Image 1 (spheres, rainbow, N blue to C red):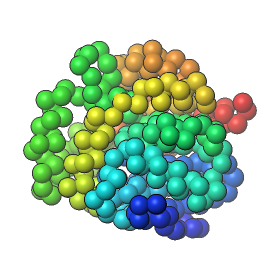
Image 2: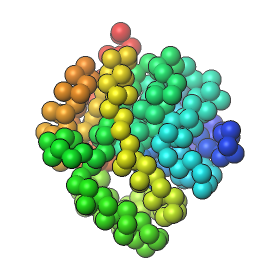
Image 3: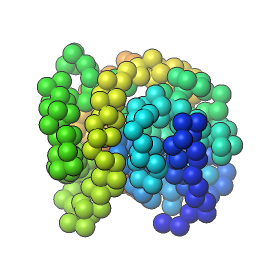
Image 4: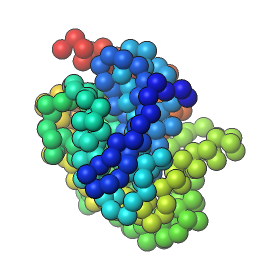
Length: 276
């Protein structure tokens, strides 16, 4: 993938964040999910950079950003996003988070408000990861989440097994060939297991419901949810954020597997937002 610009943005606590951008026009910012990198958004960058200034970043301890032992939580990731937008002089951005990247987006507006935000896109992430109410849209039963944290994320082998299973069972609907699966796993494993555990815990114990409600009231918002939990997600979002638009597509990584359909959904949302 060819980019016009690649740079590192240094945070106040010394981490360097890898940022890529391409195109010109209104800014569109993509934030990858748990342990993933800018590379997964290749098809979005290619499509939207024709009409927008597309910005993608590796959060701290992801991809080509600095691996650090501090700040591996989504409150800090929200502050890191602010540092990137400030350094790049970004105003009026459409911010699009995928999975735990949504937590980064919500934490950003918690801390800095909506003055530099034009619209927000949330890709397949409940605003509160865990819930005792089985009717809520949540990541899963507490016992299952606990087992992942206490068993799978204790070493590199466990992390590799966990992310491989998650990719094949939840993220992608079709059968992947060996090279595709290897590439996806390798993207995730650029974050070491001892950091992945911190991020997992931070994400699972996050509660961004209030920020999600505020976002839906303040700016146009779009939620794109995976098919496997769409019924629960739609009911939940229609109650919590009734002004937010909801679309359903594919698995957890639908923007990669079904990129053309995903890009059309986002393009329609961007076109509607531009008219407001």
